[in-house]
Image (cartoon, rainbow, N blue to C red; front, side, top):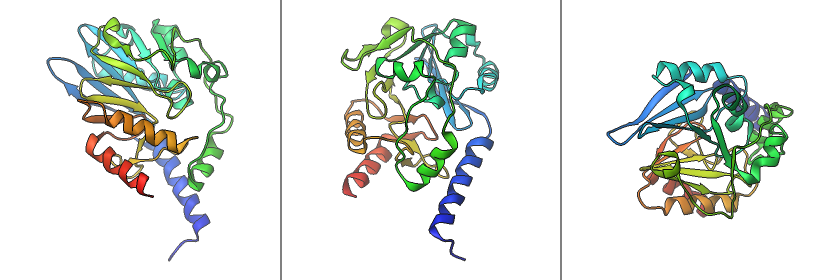
Length: 262
């Protein structure tokens, strides 16, 4: 039986919400070499990453508020004491990327780094208007209205006009690239052959390793331009989004070609 389009969209949203809420917490090692160790912590499909290099630990993103204990448990099971994490870098200030930042800042003294363009959003506890990219996203948006996280102050703000920041000052080989493809203060973090891209792109709900346009994006043209800029970087082979993934550079290239052709 073929479902009417409206009912089909409601079913899709229900499946997405069920998947996000019921997915199993996971810790996945994405690199364990002589240079570094990188672990992805997936809680309710919100990815948080911890990078270990030269005796330093760096965290990328901070998941949803209310999931603090779940991230702590995954980290400890992976041999990581949260108190040994030096800094946390937020790819942007949305609730599912900055939601536990205040907790980790206060409890463990982790310095929080983010884009200055997102500081107003952070001070407003994540209260910001989202731009749904589809009818399905519009329905999903209705379930997110009014949700907030504990407000906090960035220990260090990265200006969109300040250029690339070398992670060497934090003991890690890589860069912070201001990249306003999703929010004014969005940033991409590159470490080795990996790019941590936040919501510049996402993986598919049912096919996590297939790149897809994020549910919320206010400027699709700029977003595609930003994706092309990261694709042009030498040495980046793997893309790690804030949700689902990861995917190889070639898959992102195919995605972008398709988007530009539509």
